[in-house]
Every structure is written in C-alpha cells, then in structure tokens.
View 1 (cartoon, helix red, strand yellow):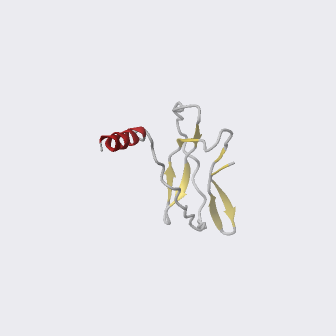
View 2 (view 1 turned 135 degrees about the horizontal axis):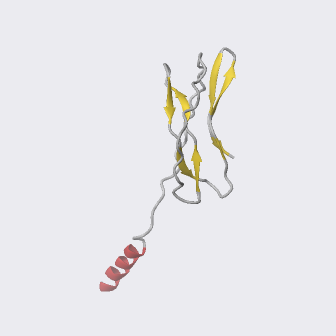
View 3 (view 1 turned 90 degrees about the horizontal axis):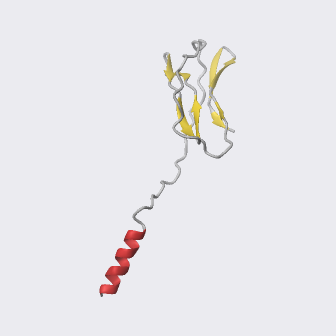
Length: 106
C-alpha cells in the first residue's frame, strides 16, 4: 500500500512545474464597416524599450466604434515565429468611405 502512495506522490510532483495551455479558440472577425469620414492623423507614440528580443512593437491605430474614431494604443507582442513581421492595420478608401484592413503577421 505504501508503494502506491509513493508512486502517486512522485507522479504528482513530477508534473508540478507543467503548464497546460488552453486549446486555441476560434477568432471571430466582424465584417468590415464602411466609415463615411476619414480617420484622423495617427497619434505620435513614445515607444518604450522592448521586454525582450522576441517581442515586436505593434503601433497604435484608429478604431471605429460605430459613432466615432478612438485610438487603440500600440504595444509589444511576442512574435509567433522567429522571422515574423507585423503588418499594421490601415485605413483604405472604399467607395463612399473608409474601411479598416486588420493588421496581420507575415
């Protein structure tokens, strides 16, 4: 009986430092809204030092909430792979308004 308890305790302690990552969740991408007015000029941001070599700065950009533009601040994110390059979101002219093209990794 003691052998079973020791084996169980050993198995428990052997996994004490393990971290289980949650399964990736699907990402919902809302359809693009056509905004009738152009976005304001970008906000000048002070870029702080990176937290590490695997991080890349993703600059801020103007978002639309259905009534007005609001600034989404830039921040550092970890690269998904070694040579990943962040392509920032951008507003493009579309018909009678403007559409936000989401940022992406390439």
